[in-house]
Image 1: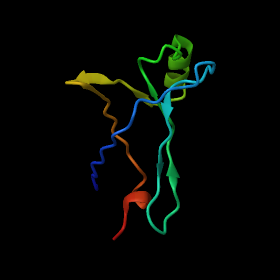
Image 2: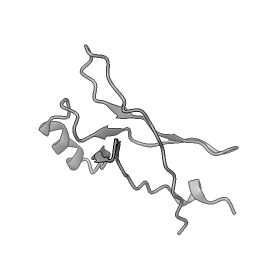
Image 3: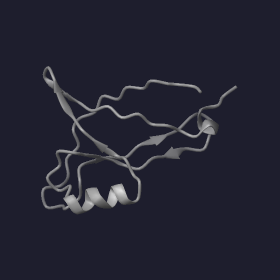
Image 4: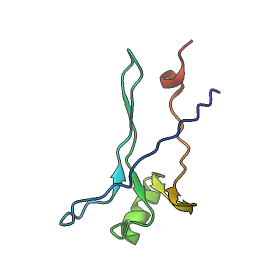
Length: 92
């Protein structure tokens, strides 16, 4: 099994103040000369628009895409392990 650690530094996303959309990060992984791999978008546990109904629906369809940011010093940090198909990672 190949393990790759990648760290992203992002600004905390925001939705338009009149929008009902959740704050989210859309993730696409693209390697040179390979088909891009799109993941479920990541949403934030502390988003007031993330309802209990939405949480239960995600559990029901077995989607684990909620980030739980924690304060570390002066920045908020969220960690998520992503497992990709071996064909996406295999380069040998």
